[in-house]
Amino acid sequence: MRRSMVLAPLLLAGMAGACSSADSGTIQILTTNADTFTGPPAVATLTVLAIDTSGDPPTMLATGPISAATIDLGQQNESEVAALQVTGADANGVELVSGASLPVEFGELTGVSLPIFVQRVGQLVPLPPGPQGDARQAPTIAQFEGQYLFIGGGSDPSLAATSQIYDFAQFALLPQPPTLPRVPLSVAFVGTVALLIDGSGSATYFDFSDNSSTEATDLAGGSFADVAGGTTVISDLGSEFIVGATRTGSPSRTVLEINPNDTSNANYPNGNLTWLFLTEIRQGAAAAWVSGFGLVVAGGSTTASGAELFTLPSTSSTTTTGDVATSGKALPFPPDPSVGAGATAVTSVSASTVLLAGGIVSLADGGLSLQDAGVRIIDVGCPSNCSVITWETALPEPIVSAQAFSLPSGGAPAFVVGNDPLLGITHAFLLTTTAATEVPLNPQHMNATATLSPVGSIVIVGGADDIQSFVPAP
Image 1 (cartoon, rainbow, N blue to C red):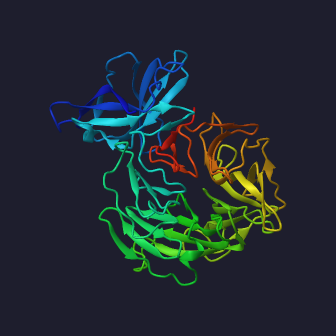
Image 2 (spheres, rainbow, N blue to C red):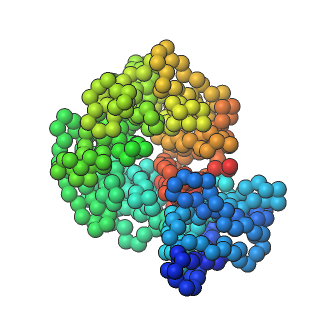
Image 3 (cartoon, rainbow, N blue to C red):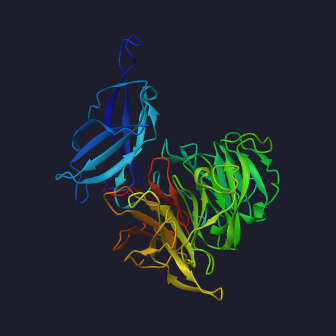
């Protein structure tokens, strides 16, 4: 169900002397649950905030009762660029609902209605428009251009070469998404151009702006097959890393770096490619970017160091051709035999900490115990004799193919999504140091994948007709 309401007129005035009259636009609130505002508890007041792109604190534009037909957002500068956030609180001021738009220049809103999807915080809620008609399991997903969510691949051969593109500017699927030149096990976007790597180890550049494709030139020193199926990690410097060791199908020690800031190689005009290598092979490892430190790969081996770090040049003693060293540095942690865990930097603990959650324990003989590997913290800045801090948090269900997300401080510090290793049922948990609280999926998903959306929510895709969205409680 897709419900909407017109929230407010937004008066748009040009700079002094640019125009003599004020134009206007409106905000259209979209919901998919009938009780988004009625609860219980019910939403009493709505607040509209402007969040600019510089990182300054939000600016309140207006607040008013939910019963109001319109809420006047006042006169705004047409040249200002900001995302609009709508929040709703109960009679005691507790925030119950939230939603945000993409950044937009206010002048572009003249005479139009800006859609904003608003949902209950702390819950998983379907995105508009409701059932998407694509329930492929184990999809390959990625956001791109700061606006779109790509959905492709997956375990259903009848759908794997097709794609879906969800537009977070309109909160709708794009019509007539392209058929892909190959079935992607891994994908990395630079602008509208995706590097698609399939199970044979072949790679193609595909441009979603015009549906053109070009075969990727083989890169000496490694093979695309060594990273096919690996998770893509994006650095805060712009580079992307496809980490072969994160896949569960076969072990790997290879990482492919795509550096869009380096266009010096004519064979790779969308960003130079570089092979990076771990000190040991791993299988089902977790990977995350830690700002100021580099790329961390943890777990996935019963014998190797518990984690390795591809360090930034300022801290690296090995060769670098991109953002990080070309060789991993074994960190002084005991082996971590987990397979299928998720990893995320948790800056609410410290700048150098990484949370590992989910996964099951691999045995020395190569078998799997189906035992939850737990929730633990490692400090990648630790110089020697480093210990793993285990939270008093046991997941109610073991999960693999997990993705972990750091949440803003003030609520639970992390959120993890993964799938039952036997049945494929998707689970989501809010994590604290003492508890793991399951967040129900409605409808239930099977073998889903999760990622951050362009509007800052966490989305879960795969194994159900809906795309589920999660916004944490403040």
